[in-house]
Length: 273
Image 1: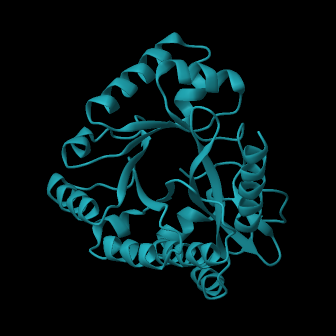
Image 2 (image 1 turned 135 degrees about the vertical axis):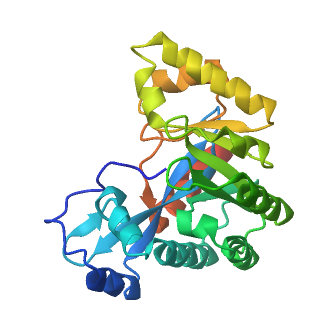
């Protein structure tokens, strides 16, 4: 999931031809922000790695502005790899804030999913992460990753051998390639924010969500609901059996230093309770 909202004020959209994008890539301007994924009690159980463009003149740019251009220029896979390298570097200096498994998820683009090096790159990243509690999850978009069953089974088998989890992102709003559920171990279905927003005014959406939760249970997967903006949404989804949540109600995507500060603060608060 790529958060749609802007990340703050910015100047006019900068040039995004191939030359400017390559320059941004060389300058490591495509940076990771982390949005917490929380459990039923609001505890941080993981985070999604989201790309932001730290432009020297336009400020922090949201992915809706530049991701499509990166993809069109064939640079999305390279910028994602660079972003993950920055995540690894940041965790090298992270404070001691993990005492239980913590999932880091990221969106893999079609080029990565179709290629043969994604799992090896993830394994290399895991070997260099300093915290054994960290687990890696690849989020597969329902749209834009037209994997046939054979390729899907091979990828899922590689991930399972490497202890890398798979999540199906934007579940239910794309082409609903349900064959992916029969291709191997799926750990998570990510419920698209549009379902969360629509359930308040349409009871049929609540029934759809409950059906998705039941479907996930059949395949021993969890459901993460995206786009939680109110306490009421959180409580209602908990009653439906959703177990993980993500959205502005809990936290906006955070730059890595601020993410670590908030983790430390939460750990300190938990210790005093």
